[in-house]
Length: 216
Image (cartoon, rainbow, N blue to C red):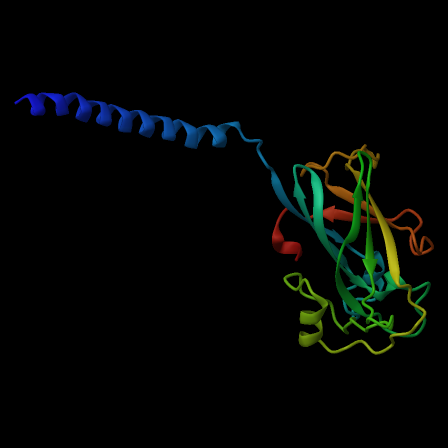
């Protein structure tokens, strides 16, 4: 009987310890979820419509698109769908090629974002033709997949630059005023200026936020 009485407090203590650890573990598991910094992740789509297309309705569309991935308003990565006009001084007598490229060398400050588009080169420095003859679907984000699905664009020349420097500033549709950069879905327009070839559009291209996927 004595041994039975001596084990009873020990069992009770063990039960109490297990319950205490369970409660403690519960609170430990939920505290980080409430205390951790919230991460806002946005994927935004923008489209530039080339107004010259209105005069040539029979030609393939030459719109440009951007897909931006942001975490807490910081651009982490992006993709650019465009035409070879971004790499050329002028197009004379031939149809443009189309590309999709990732944004590289992304730099962001409180007023603007800059990024670069790079032509693919081999280890020996030779340019690789990654342009195709038709607009690329927006679900394709690599030149390898684009080349496997579309015909190769032929007028590829060494006149193209190795890289294109681009900058973005964000604007609101309010008397066309430019606002200081503060990335959010309320910014309906992104103005992209080609720094390498400023003669293309000195004021930059106005990319409009697509509020649904119908523009894709």
